Image (cartoon, rainbow, N blue to C red; front, top):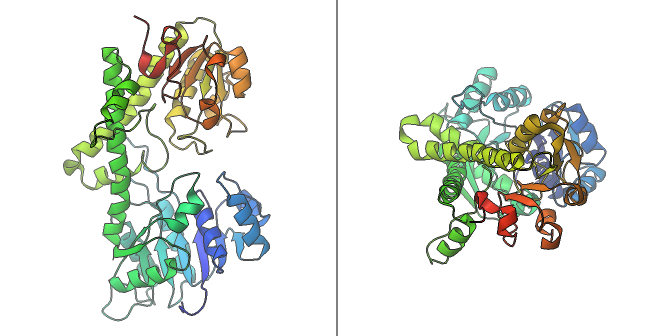
Length: 434
């Protein structure tokens, strides 16, 4: 790849990170080939449309597709730079074993078309050592190429790891403006990756080694998970003591060096709910705090289910509205969502009494099939349902005035309605009138 000209870029994986990344790279003037295994996703993007919901992404994708700078396909093709942004889940084996099969499969496809001078950048959040595993796989498939860290000669290929740091709803802005940790297999690889990212990233790009960059990404999300676990555990304790957790946190946060986060029905999303397990798996004996935090946040989901069940049973025959399915506010991403699990569990137990309000969904997920639960809007919920269970703090829910919910039974797992009358509420953590 010559620094004097815009590279041809191949982005493998066109999901919540891959598609915005491909679009931003294309906006910088590079010709981008986006690769995805889904024929439907490929067709959607080539029409200039998008299959995910993200602020301003539709206009950007439409523009770069119309200009011929972004084309989607199902097959990896030759390029100067390859960016891999595929899922890295953990196995449902009870041990939370990281599954990097998608990364290795993508690397295998890239290996077929590699040419001397190419750079491969892994962006998928990955266990420490994944970038090296990817390098080793490519080395076994392409013995004709000299790969970094495996030769004393100048390598033919550069390989680096560079994770994103983005917030759903602000992905485009943060991809361009947030700082980046760029970890190379060798310092030379890191410098090549740095040159690539400086074409479209305005934030500070800091170079390091690949393993440190992999760990940095995991640490960032584990840190957040531990802090959320403190808030969630505090909410369970407050419930047992008959206290209003929101009031306790509000007062405690007046201390100049205390900043307790807000509790919820658990922790969701593909990052915070998953990444800490990669650290635990890599050093199980040395990570008791991180493991415990994961357990606390998972247990909060069951706590929310138990409290919601108690409320529904206290109002026999009443219609119930579960507000929200997304893993956080104002997005359409339901991955690892505790709200989704709570609502689905209630639907399986109470059937057609359960109604779901999710403004970012066109239909209910498959686990609601045959439960009798219905997807309705917030206006119908306020008119027809006597019980409201707040699971996501979408803005449309926050905007509901007291007059429209004063007579409802409420379990507010997000603390969005602090003015809800105590006698008719389970506000926060099952607070009842004395």
